Image (cartoon, rainbow, N blue to C red; front, side):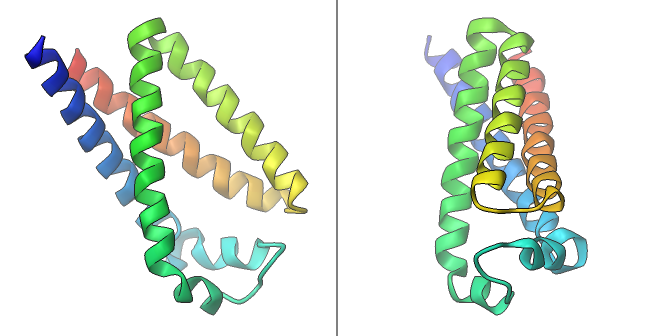
Length: 131
């Protein structure tokens, strides 16, 4: 029992760390960062994001931990089908959120692409560690 819990904790920590690192690259100004910032309906200046960087990084880390935990729970309960259900839910929710905020399709594809890429990394981590 303790070995299982330890394995699950390592899965969550490793998956969340890899997902967080992906975000650092994905939203880097040389990848999608400048494009993403320019598509934000509520603020157009990338300098606005620099002011709140500590807050954004903290929220991103917490999000990665939560996202990994949910993926692990769904995988444990339903197998890969549970993770696929999460992918559909995340994509649908991201689209609704983008539309509600007045965002563009470009913004949706950047954000949804990131979340689905995170989910692929998290799922790979789950499969490698959990077997």
